[in-house]
Length: 325
Ligand SMILES: NC(=O)C1=CN([C@@H]2O[C@H](COP(=O)(O)OP(=O)(O)OC[C@H]3O[C@@H](n4cnc5c(N)ncnc54)[C@H](O)[C@@H]3O)[C@@H](O)[C@H]2O)C=CC1
Ligand SMILES: CC(=O)[C@H](N)C(=O)O
Picture 1 (tube, rainbow, N blue to C red):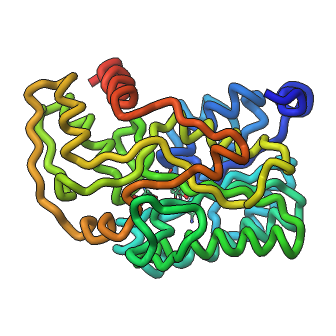
Picture 2 (cartoon, helix red, strand yellow):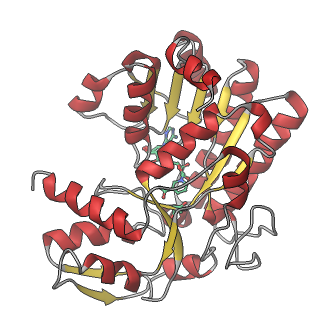
């Protein structure tokens, strides 16, 4: 690791605000960043009532992403240097609440970009495989290709990518963005995406030995274990400017279908039964990349995943088994 990175970690910790921090990624990211930069330098925020454990784990504040003044106050009062913008409505819930998704995902992104510009903050905004559509090459999907997504979630994420890149070009904003695949973690309640089955299948397998999947058995999608996802986020945040040839990168770890993950999971839960009842999420999945080409991230700033399908299943099963019922 370059010395510069180590120095910024140890001597001059950034103060970091995470929006939408009580979702699937935020709580885990806060834990990781607090272990690197100190408990009080990472401020979690959301509009959701936190648990006692969250309140005791470090600073937590209410911030609605649609309230620009409230965000300004949070940034000023907490002397924020990095903004990690997680607030969003995901692909499946976004289709059920389009006007709200437009506000949270698009207006919310406008607010944080403007704020980051005004207060000279470094900003990370995640994008997704959902930023591609049926006209994109799907196997593999390269970093730069046609993007005509068919969900409001995808449309809002292409908008975020373009707005962030524009603010970088126009105002010199330090905007960094990764397009994540479906993220798998032992949180039993992911946020309402099309890839959520790949989390739910573990909980169902270990609780009941039976899972009903809302996608067809052959629906192949790119995926990643949460530890790889959060490490990728941290690595791009600390990557020296000169390594970044672009502001938005594809990252991935594996691709699998429901039938393939079920087969791997049967090594741990031999009698696992899976039924298939495709619903409206099938159409979304059919428009998304099957295999994600992240060679540019690997080449430019050294991205490399650690968890493949077998290792991810092993860790997920072990983590969920350790939890109280
Ligand atoms: N989980 C995944 O598989 C992937 C996630 N991402 C992106 O990563 C980010 C985080 O994702 P998750 O944690 O999975 O999402 P999530 O749905 O679990 O969490 C989103 C959070 O945003 C908050 N939120 C909603 N409206 C808000 C508002 N008005 N003001 C402030 N906060 C509000 C919610 O309360 C929730 O805690 C999102 O931007 C998502 O698009 C990208 C690719 C994959
Ligand atoms: C891949 C994503 O962005 C998310 N998990 C979703 O399915 O909406």
